[in-house]
Length: 343
Image (cartoon, rainbow, N blue to C red; front, top):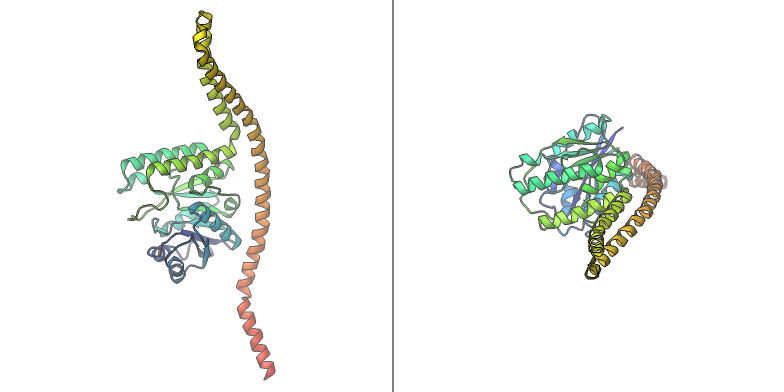
């Protein structure tokens, strides 16, 4: 049996969550069971009540606002504990066409991919400005390089994960999961695919960021951190070489004037160059240490993944047992038997 759970991180989505859930498919070829899980990120409206009324099978509440990235991670954990074989993530604002879930999970069902990203084909979206389209294309190209995979729409939140892929993902960002999970997946050599999807126009502004510069800054920081986790030797070594190269310029300037007999007035160049080259050398030393730390982190990730597998297998069995033998039903039957004996 193949179980699909569609998770929806939400923050004050009481007006749109019902429509989002209503658009999701109730049957997909190759999938035996479909459930909907809503992650409430500290909503102050009736999002939870609206989600339950619309047919959500599970609701996970953060209690307070933890951010989109951590809500996404909590959703993955909750889906895995409930025995999901495939996990689809979508937004609560009904931005994505729910009918395209079947296209999203198809490459996983056919064994062609571990992670599937919905390509919004942003170049065809009329309400996207030319600047936004160019930035999206440039960002996706950069993530493709960092992840070593061809990714058409790196910041699309409409994506699917196999159980094995979701098991190995750990989101540490407090901003967004989109680029970090792709870099992790690519560096773990998981198969990443893109499929074209349809979108609905969302009128309200994004709640994730206030301006494009802020989005670029926070996304760039997340990408750099995620890449540095897997390639610290490259990051620190390149930084060290750049600093040493910059330091070599004023040192060469000092030496040039020194051999011409005018070195006394160029001491500042020597000091600046020496400091830059020293910092570069220290950065190169950090590269070796960071590489050792990264290797140790990979061992810890393998251990964490194995522990998760054990925990999730136990939780999934308990979940199935509860469905087969609901505790409340057993209690009622015992009460009826006791009442019958008294009579």
